[in-house]
Every structure is written in C-alpha cells, then in structure tokens.
Length: 230
Image (cartoon, rainbow, N blue to C red; front, side, top):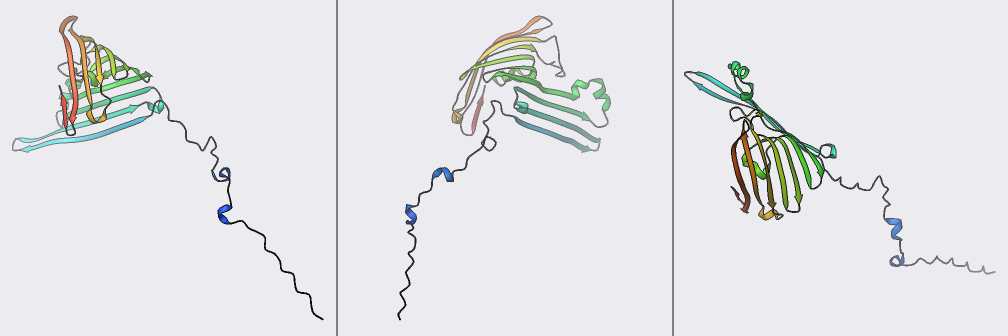
C-alpha cells in the first residue's frame, strides 16, 4: 500500500526588500523640549582676563636697578548674559628698594587706564559709567564720567560728560571738566573696515575754557596688512 505523498508547505510570501516602506515617523527621533537646542540669549557672555608680572633689571658698576611692573586686565561682556559689562585695565609699578617713592605719590605707581561699567539699554544703545577710552574718540584719551551712545544702523551718535585724568600722575581730577558729542559712521564690510568720527568737545580747567575744538578721527584697513589711523 502506497503512502500518500506529503503535502508541501507553502512559504509565506515576502515582498521584495525594495517594496518595504518604513514610515519616516518611526525613524526620526522626537526631540523633547529638554533635548532641543535653546535659543541664543539676546546678550551673550564673553570674558577675557589677564594677569602679568614683569621685571626690568640693569646691572652696572654703579649698582643694580630692578623695576617691577604688575598688570591686571579684565573685560566681561554681558556678565551672566545680562545687560551689564565691565572693562578694567590697571597697572602697578615700583623700583625695588625705593618704596618711599610709592608712599609719597601712590598715584604715580598705580595707573588705572580703564575702570568702567556699561549697561545696555537695548541692542542699539548703552550707557557707561567710570573711566573709559571710547573707540570712536580714542585719541582724546580716557574720560572719567558718563558716556552714552545710540546706533542707527551704521550711524552712531554719542555724548560724554566727565573729567580728564590729571596730566601729572593720571589720577582723578575734578578740576578738568569736559563735555562733548560726536557722530560716527562705521562700515559693515569686514574686508574693508572703516570708522569715521566727527565731534565737538570743550575741555575746561578750574571752570575756565582750556580747549574747545572740532574733532575728526578716521581709522581703516584698506589693505589686508595695512591699518590707517588719523
């Protein structure tokens, strides 16, 4: 007696690989609010600081001379992503063995070139209090007082009200009042930087006019390795 042939099991039909479609929703990760990148704050914090110490020494038959110089600089833009910034540059110099000179005139040893706090009213205007060298009117030197600046695109207008540092030891001198304003135009082309300032200032000495002048300043880099300032 013959056995009936075994039935062949049919294999399930599998569509070709190229026909298998995967939903993009199943592949793309879902970003939760914690995983998504946060938007950049309006005011970013940037900090740059430096501390240095140097000695200038000379040796001769008449004796040895050692001059010491210490410097501290700190520039903090938008501290803690706030509207406040600070700029400080301070040096201290003395000659070893001649400490009496420091005691007699401490301001000659300690030089404060910059010590200011700036508040950004918004992205186009700010006000600064303290000692600061304004880049738009840099060649008049530091100003002890209040400075305000407002930008309108490439055009900036500003005003200062303060005092000039003492001309003998660079300390604060309330007898050297100065007032002024300026208009500055800055290019927006990084490859051809230009800044031109036109201003008017009056500087007094003990309440009397010392200097009154129209101020013109220009800086640019017309070539890659050439910088001009006037």
